[in-house]
Image (cartoon, rainbow, N blue to C red; front, side, top):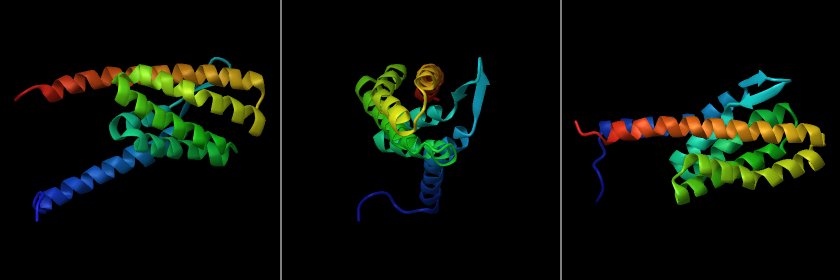
Length: 168
């Protein structure tokens, strides 16, 4: 038998990793989806894209998809827009793929948003019957929110990388 020996310490570490992954991929996006900050004429900054971007960077496309789906459940169920699930899963997957290619969080987030945008506009207008004015405002707020979260994540990752690379 090859591989690492099964010990209590390895078992605890794998359980911690599984719990951490569950929290980041599923629970955190759900929690953040109910938090919005309202500003300037009822515009809202959404918090769950931060969890989707983080999951995409850390766990790849599958993580981005899971976080995108879980972060969309509140909107889909309670606000009556199930189409947002596919859009945010697409956003998570694309953010991960672009990050894998470029290594740049903000650029990857913007490219993923550009891929998501046609889905968002078409489904919100034709299927969810939202007004063009509302969708235009939503597009701007989501763009600004995505840039904001991606920038904060990028700023937070750089110091952590330096810290982890230091030798003790």
